Picture (cartoon, rainbow, N blue to C red):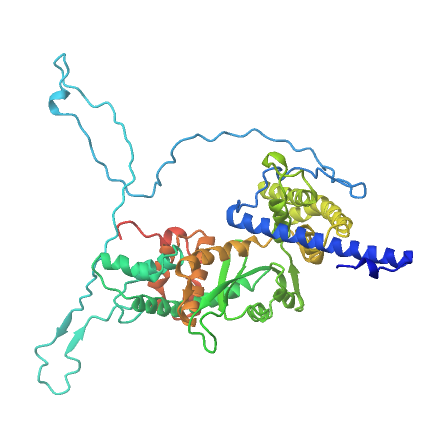
Length: 527
């Protein structure tokens, strides 16, 4: 603020107060400038910098390099022995053994098989080199010919019964459609697994001389998805069987939503769960991001629910019998942002390691424990014991570090926000050490939502709510198939073939991915 000298008071106490106010105002302005500079550097990094969050200056096993007297550095609990490893042979990987082989024999002329001594030369071996070949896609028309039969003798006889018999119609997933189950599976996989929009598929079909409109392709997808709803219900039941459900969501633009403009923002939710041998993924479209969406999905479920720190999930954590688990990856990401925007020193090198790196070292040490547990294939009980012995002391030290540095850090800066984020959600972040079946992060759900996000960049929006629902069905089936070791095209072709004759619950249960051996749904290259 501007102060006229003539208006200044004569007494010392009033002058001191004015100076103190000016210093406080100056400090606030400097903090605001620092914050805005951080935001500019963060924006530049998002646009032009590395997208990876992997740290170059430290590895997962490094202990904190900077500690304060009141925060002791975590001490190693055991000696780590690095065993010898076998170096992988460099070179081209062999072609898959399941691909068909076509032998092309290359021989020398008959005249060259005569030795200079006059004797006939004999074959002593061969040299084989394999080349990968590609046969362009082929469209063909399957003609279903239904033979008719009639009785000449019964012609003209009163009430002779049926005089004409014909072979029954072929049962189809979509009655009266020209699409076979293989074509339907191809269209679905092309859009939802390969991110190929329908208008591009239409152009591809046109190149082969077949006119298939986007309306026709879209109608096939919607009708096929409706036939698959009983399988989706079984997937949701498996997810609700516990003991852990991972949840995430991402935006989606849906046109022609009742009572909403086409520019409104909708959401695709993903729920992951089930036993290790029955991994299930279920997508669900909803116009809102309300916390009521996961609550409705969970129903009477009781167990662990893991998600990010979006406020809508707070309602989930307040449900009876549900324990809300946080995500350390999100907490870590806040500190990574700090390292990406810190100023450079002379020579273009990063400034010396600071508080953000100390926080990242704590988290790296926690993940080093998780990596060791995975490599040693420990049981859930053994993982629990390992976390109690090694992870809990590191978490205690990290919490002390956060409490110590929180009042020393400007709250509006990126570092202050990162520290405050971890403190605000600390109770949820440390839940994972209570059960060996839990993970420290929500990567399962984030990895599951990623294929949808990649596809959305290509097809941009859903043309109607029914289209969004169909997308949810097929993303659920494809990602669940992949999680259980199935090739998604082969799996969809299999269920499209079986669904028309499925009537009882047992028929639909048999179509769940974990009830089918991968070799039972494999499609040969000759089909």
